[in-house]
Image (cartoon, helix red, strand yellow):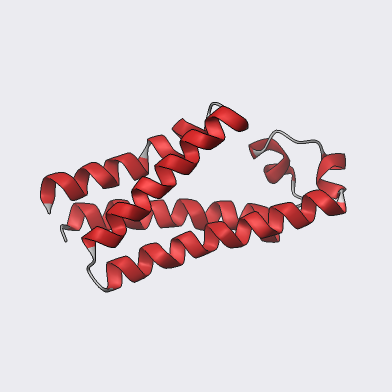
Length: 120
């Protein structure tokens, strides 16, 4: 696995850890409200907090899977994880916010996928 692919994959993982932090640990923060374009009142809703925390665990597990793929030098696993992240971002851009494809799926995961295809 190339060093470029490894660095890009680590950056994707860091992005997902940050999202997990916002959703799971900083659920009521001003930063979370700004990132997700929600009011402080929305974030106080126990249902929203539960949904955010569940989604945060998902994002943390994505990071864990990326690290496992890197640890075992599995380009196939990493490739499919990036395809999965991009597909989920495309779905989210249609169902939630069109910017999701650019913020979560369009940048680093696509670069990581291209890096896998070009350098490995």
